[in-house]
Image 1: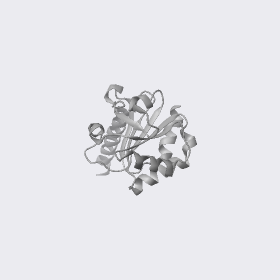
Image 2: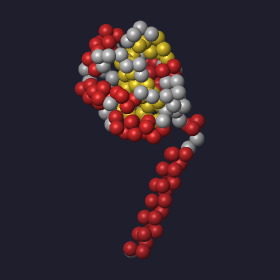
Image 3: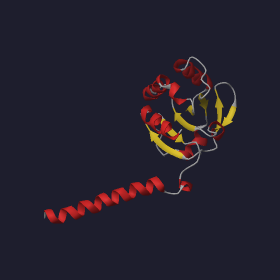
Image 4: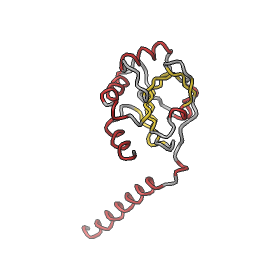
Length: 168
């Protein structure tokens, strides 16, 4: 029995390694690009998501003002904001602009040029999200506009920092 089990384990490990290599090296055309979504920033400017992501990482979180997990996510970025100088951080909400401005002032009392709060229409963003919208919801794109991650719930800021620092 033991002699038959070893080749099976080797085959399973080989398949797992082959799959990981495929995922890592698969053609870039398979990866989703930054969606052309219209945004209204808290400073009154209207921009598209790709405009904010020009030649730098873009980490966008869809948040709600009454979501405790969203507040934790924003707080973790606030504590590490200096580590994101070459990254565009964006918090997107479907709420009314006064609510979004209040959320912005609550977590970031000073203007940070690479961090924005924005309003978007849910129906415009929905095609790029999974069916079930859980807050916070993260969309992360690299410098070339390719999707790095899409995640529902709290995402460890340390992992984002590690990847960004490795690719800068």
